[in-house]
Image (cartoon, rainbow, N blue to C red; front, side, top):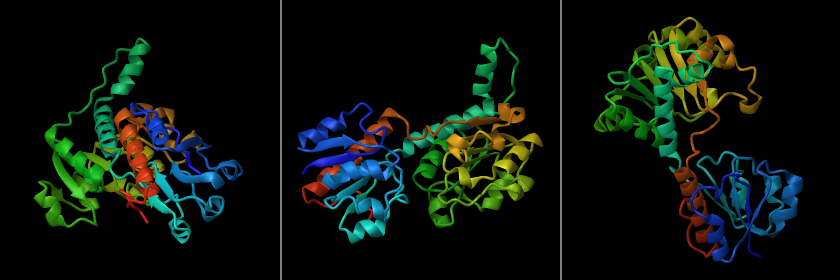
Length: 315
């Protein structure tokens, strides 16, 4: 019994052939539906000793189908989709890949910020339509950049924005202000950032709205907001209203509420299209990040199966 179930669509799709690595270790990698359909999983899981999993739910019912499973290697950072208690009860090790895509997400955030400030994508589309109307933007250098969330991505962003000539304000209730100051940045409250930062990057965990109607009302005029974290961190209607009133200069994000079912999102309204940039979860989609996530997941699987401690243990 040596089967490894893979339900991440992008696993081994970068420059490194991780499938061959699994086979070289005597394992038999098999792919299944990324949505974790129970009927399909029931055909494969009973014979699997390891699972490299994407973001879909892994419940107690799912694990009932896997009596021989020894390790679930999450292909990514978040483990909220995995019933950790159910895995622990069954003696199944759960791992993840912390930091594997942090640089990729940070670089996309910088790109979104520059695009929002200079309307790059809007102008490119207009030129294809033989429209050479000049769009006047704003420069990033000299800006006050407020970063909400000082985790791995927030720290990379702070360094990169500072290198581009920006003053960096940081808000994170879980980080001591002395740590922020010693890193060369200025600790601020969320309300301070709303009222004083010309560019704001949302990089916080959680699902509560940080940018809402009250934020827009208190925001400095002409603010740019970048969200490369979670759609739920913003009130999309409030942002749309802020763009129409010109309280906000632009909004850019790598996500929308409802995602593929988001056609009715207020942020996709035609009248604010030139001020809004939305990308389709491109944050982790670089060859390098895909390779690193896959390599880390593979290393965790191999470590557990030979009886060594997991490298990135979650439970």
